[in-house]
Structures are given as C-alpha cells and as structure tokens.
Image (tube, rainbow, N blue to C red; front, side, top):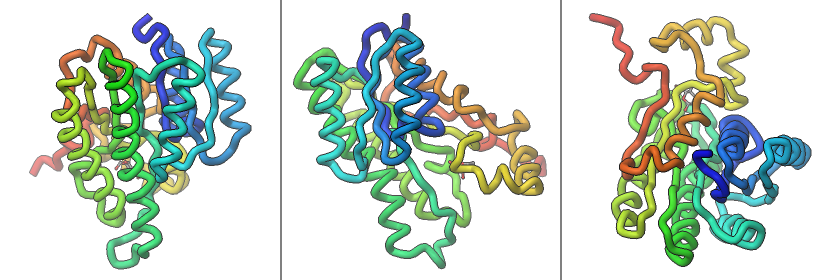
Length: 255
Ligand code: BGC
C-alpha cells in the first residue's frame, strides 16, 4: 500500500473534497484525523466507512481559523496514532460576492478559513514533523483560482492566491527538513460549494462548455491526486501546484 500506517489530518474532512480525500487516504493505508466544524453525524458515518477499509480514524471538532484548534488536531494525531506524516489543508469557503459588495465579515471569514488556516496548519504540522524527524508532506488544496481570476469571487481568489505563495515559500523553507509542501488546484468539482451552479442548468451548461473535458470533476478524481502527492511517487515535488482542472485554465476560444 502506498501510505501504509501513515497518519494524516484532513481539515474540512467530513464533506466535499475533504471527505473523498480522507477515504482515499485510508484506502491507501493511512489512519486519519477528520477535522470538522458541523454535522458530527457525517463524521461518525465516515469513521465507520474508514473502519470498513481496515483503518482507524478520529473525528475532532475544530475551527481551523484558530491556531489553537489546529494545534489540537496535531495533538489528537499524536495522542491517538503517535505521529503526523501528512497534513491536508483542505477546509475552504467562498461567498461569491463582488468586490463591490463583499463585507468586512465576508472578507475575514474567507481569508481566515481558507488562508490563515493553511498558514497555521502548515506551521503546527511542520513543527510536529520536525520534532519527530523523518520529514513529512503538507498538501494545500487551493484552486485554479490561485492564479486565474473569478470575477464575483474576489476574496476567494485572494485567499487562494495567498495559498499559492504559502506553498512556494513554505516549500522552500521546509525542504531542508524533508518536508514537501505541494498545492493541488482543482477546477470545478461536484460538491456542495458548487450547488448554486449545479442547480442552474444554463450556468452548468456554460461551465461544462468551458471545460475541455466537458464536465465537472468528481471528488474522487481530486482525492486520487492527493494520494499520489502524499506518496513517495511524488518524492521530487515541492513548492509548486499541480492542477486537476479538466483543462479549464488552458481553454481558449480559438480567436
Ligand atoms: C470554485 C468554484 C468554481 C470553480 C471553477 C472553484 O475553486 O470554488 O466556485 O466554479 O473553482 O471555476
């Protein structure tokens, strides 16, 4: 198995892409700390699914915008499994508000949950990895919008652009410790964050037409890339972002 007995934390791990990541990492042999903020029942159901895969997991309710809560996730990993090998900074939100009507509260929420969490998640995970020795992997789930404007979602783009530089800079800083820091930038994925698009047939048709592969990704198509990035097959990857976007960023109207 690619990740036999590795220990991973997945933030935002009981829904959407995070849920798929937790299950795929477990299938590859890892034990999991599932961070969640709501729906404990979903976390419990996921723990049962992970147990059925022959792996262990614990759900920990933590607010990733608070460094002390992130530290609690690391402490839980160490208390239960003895170490931390893989940190997945996945939790994310968006408001889809224009720069003209994004409130200070919207701005703070998006930046805190998406970027501050990834910064301090990287910090607390790296400290544990350095203390235990042997390196580690930190994977930041960003977006095509770390580099590609999404008008009407400026705060989100800003947070993802910040994660891009976090990945690059922390990747360089932490390389001497054997810690790889990699970003994974999905395009449009069929999860709750895209409900408004999926419920609007005209918008969905336009979105699918803009994607060279012609459709949104399933969460598992992102999670499979995470398994690769967390494994030794990706041993020479750090301080960069891999995009799994069906080609959307490269699309051209052919003019
Ligand atoms: C955003 C979605 C958007 C997708 C493709 C994602 O990062 O969360 O709102 O549809 O990128 O543009």
